Length: 132
Image (cartoon, rainbow, N blue to C red; front, side, top):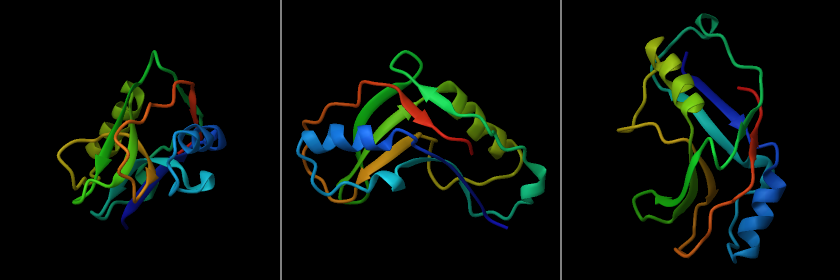
């Protein structure tokens, strides 16, 4: 079975408002904001994993944030949120056989699939992520 694990952004309304005030019009809805922990296209047995039931709080001190544009056309607006705990959790899944289709794991929140404004500021407050 393929495995998809994510953490929903619990304070998504605040993040949504932050980027809306900067003029991003085509934002993902707040209830859709999340960080993918792992998406394995290789079949694994989900019973082999222990899923983290705790929330994670990403602060400016414990996460490196940036605005980036992903995708072939570089129009997918994301806010990267690199954090050691997120990386350790990704490695946990990888060590138990999960696959990954990209060169490296970059925890991020996809904000818009159609944005060209390159002069955006990162969200400066804590980001609260729910359990896996």
